[in-house]
Length: 159
Ligand SMILES: NC(=O)c1ccc[n+]([C@@H]2O[C@H](COP(=O)([O-])OP(=O)(O)OC[C@H]3O[C@@H](n4cnc5c(N)ncnc54)[C@H](OP(=O)(O)O)[C@@H]3O)[C@@H](O)[C@H]2O)c1
View: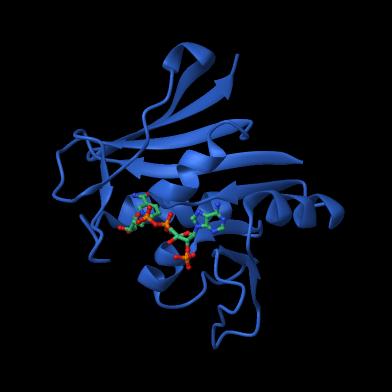
């Protein structure tokens, strides 16, 4: 099973606002996210899930929380209290690929575990106080896979 991480990062490292508000709206980048993850399980932190407001359609939504009593009104959303448990569940179900979709707390846990990262580098600075965690680029091979007016997409594979 391939464990992939997908993120969009502004030039100044911002990925969002802790208030839950979006830092930018670039529909072409969101389309890239939807097209890439469609059909695969997506694993996200409880805060990102609540920011979305509803599950992403056409894919299994898995939410991580440390609160064992956490409930959502959406029956088809799975809740796990650790990233390892969520990944093991997906392995048992024999998914070919899964995506870690944020936010910052979950990216930080996941970077040491993922096989690849699909990083949209937005061509602008953004307002916000949530940042993508620093990682050592020398451990990764980087390939540009998309170049658009407002963003470029890079595929990082572990060396
Ligand atoms: N630009 C992008 O590509 C992108 C993608 C995704 C999100 N975002 C942005 O990122 C922001 C949210 O990021 P965030 O870092 O604040 O929150 P987050 O990572 O989405 O969620 C954090 C929550 O995850 C749970 N959690 C953390 N560590 C855990 C662990 N070890 N085991 C189980 N559960 C754990 C906790 O939930 P409990 O508090 O319930 O215990 C924690 O409060 C938002 O602004 C969002 O818009 C941006």
